[in-house]
Image (tube, rainbow, N blue to C red; front, side, top):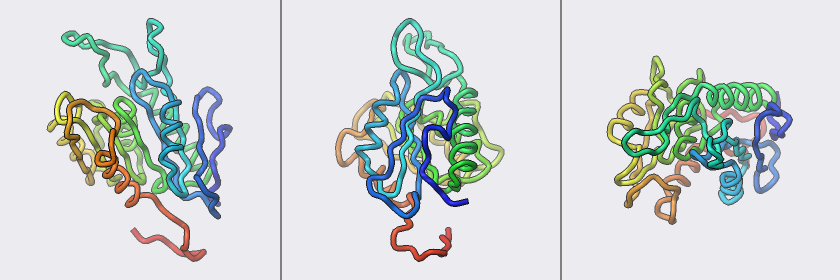
Length: 241
């Protein structure tokens, strides 16, 4: 099946998502980057991120989390429930991802991108922030085939998600130097679930999106290694590795 650009109608009408086409036309689209926003946000900010990244031969899909926050707080979340930390009073990130897994793994990746649009798992990548990073790692750890890669900023592997054997999908995880979810224990768990894990620590506290060129550089290098390109490749050629 020939690969084609995904359109909104390839996915269930119940989902809220935005699709950004590659910056320049190509004979065939080579990659899909699925963008998953953080807790309490919407897909709008990551739709803009996809446009700003302007990755060659890459279609970006910014997906909104399925559940709205309560109490008219605004924004959405990826968890199965809402719970609050008894000490800090803040919302817990890891409250189960059953509903999010169904949407991301089955409705977006398997049914939409692979079956309808002809993509191979190797041509699909995730970029998630916070709870969105957790959802991305949960989905990737449960796939039967290896994906192109996962970038998670401030998002660890959920407690309930642990593969029977380590997954070969490459992972880049980034977090703050303190007050971060990317603890030593979280990294050890990731390395148990994935065979190829790269960790980068910000030179500042808190898990935030990149704020300068230095912080963005490892992300762009990861994209450069993992995004496929058909430009200049003779027709009929086969990628090795």
